[in-house]
Image 1 (cartoon, one colour):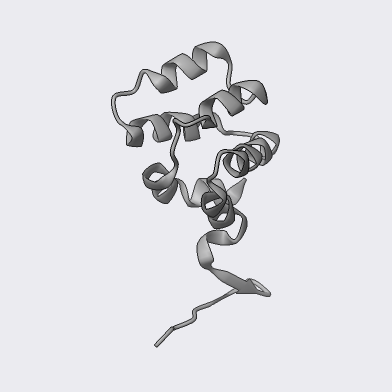
Image 2: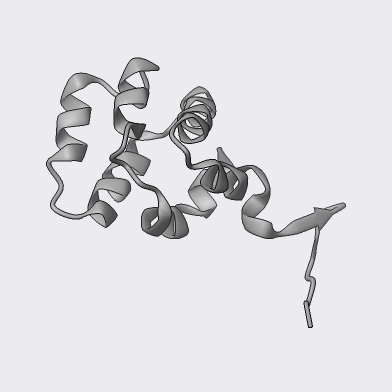
Length: 100
C-alpha cells in the first residue's frame, strides 16, 4: 500500500483506466457502481487515475488493483508498484544503480 501512495504521481500518468481495468475493479468490489461512474466522469485519463487512486485506501484494495492490472495487460504497472518503482533497499538504505 505504501508503494501505491509513494508512486501516485507516476501512476497518474501511466495507468490505463479504460480497456477493462475499471470494470475489473468493480467486479473485485474495489469500486462501487457510483464510484465507478465518478471515475469515468472525469474528463482526462490523468484525472480518472487521480480519482481512482484516491479510492484505493486499504491493503486489500491494493492487492486487488495489482491483480486487475495484471489481468488487463498492465503487468508493467503492477511491477512498478511491486518493486518499489525500481528502487532497491537493503536494510533501509536506498541503493542507486547507474547504467552506462
